[in-house]
Length: 288
View (tube, helix red, strand yellow):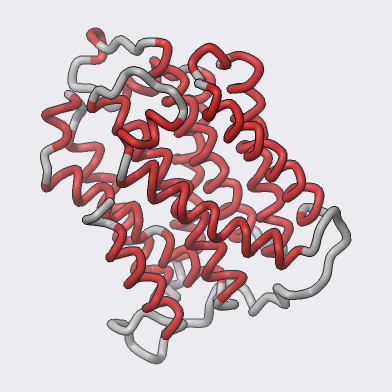
C-alpha cells in the first residue's frame, strides 16, 4: 500500500488540476464524445450524485486495498491461502476496481470527456504490468512474461491515443477491451483454463478452491470495468453506464453468497452482502 498510495493521491490531484495530460500538445483532435450533463437528475431509487460519489470513494478504496495490500484483502474475506498466486489474483481484481473508481472520479467529479477518463484510469494497468516486469513476478508465479509485455504495450498505446485524441483511439480501445472482456468471461466460467493461458507450463496449473473463487472474482470485477468502458465508447450516457457496470458485480456477489459461502468468513459475508445491496441500488438508480 505504501508504494502505490502516494502515487494514486498525486494522480487524483493531477487529474483535478488538468483536463488534459500536461505532457501532450494543446491542439489535440476532438474527443470521442461531447461533454455529458452528468449532474442531471434521473429517476431511480436514490439521488444519482450520491450514488456516483459513493461509487467513486468505495471503488478507489476497495481497489487500493485489493491491489496494494492483497494479504490484508485476503484476510478480510477469510481466505486462508496467502500464496503469491492468490495475492496476485487479488491485485488483478483490485486494479480493475481501481480503474472504475478513477473513471467515476473523472466523469462525475471532473466532468471530463470519455476518452480522457479512459486514459487516466488505464494508467493503473500500465503501473501494474510495469511493476510485474520490474519485480519479475512471472518467475514467482510461473507465467509467461510475453503476455505481460503485450498488455503493457497495448495499454501504453491506448492511453496515448486517448490523451491525444488520435483518430484510431475509439476502435483501438473497443478492440482491446473486447479482448479483455472475453478473457474475463473465461475467468468466470472456466477459471482453470484462464489460468493456463498465462502459464509457462499449462499442464501443471492447479487451482485450489479459494483460488478458483478469486480467479472468478477478478473476472467478474474486470468485466464490470469492460462493460463501463465499452458502453461509454458506444455512446451510452455516463450515468447509465455506471448502472450497467453493476450487473457483473451483482452477479459476482450473488455467486459468492449462494455458492461460495464456505470460503467466506463472517466479515467477508457481511461485506459481500453490503456490496450486493449497494450495486443493486446503484443499478436501479442509474441504469434507467
